[in-house]
Length: 183
Image 1 (cartoon, rainbow, N blue to C red):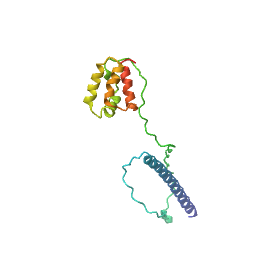
Image 2 (spheres, rainbow, N blue to C red):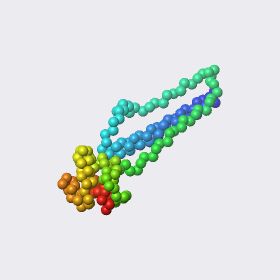
Image 3 (cartoon, one colour):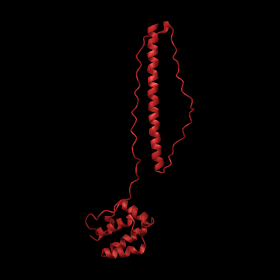
Image 4 (cartoon, rainbow, N blue to C red):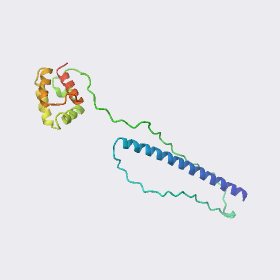
């Protein structure tokens, strides 16, 4: 009987250790969640997460095990210790937004058609920021530029549109013009 009580006491102690480990893991997970929430708040993004039900602040009372009578006692089996999942490390700095594309120096061979010097991503960028989303207008301007004979003529021609010459997009477009006229 005394040996059984010792086994039960060891089992209770094992359960208490597991509960402590789970509580520590829960605290660590909550810290990770709070850190991620701060990063989201810093990015000014509204998360679309369902609200968690509020849990009462009452302490959790351990359940006392039933002590079997002597005739019901079976040999004690060593309980398995549950594995505690690893908690990912919290990043030290929040993610920074990607910088705007910077104009690259003119690279590549001269092209006879300016469209061949414009990447797909730049095509969308130019259409959105320089041509106010008007694809047909952009196509007409590119046709007109193809008919010009020098970079100076092309720069003079695009001057009529009143684009912000300090913008990164404008500088990217000038680099495409330079490639078209091999400068």
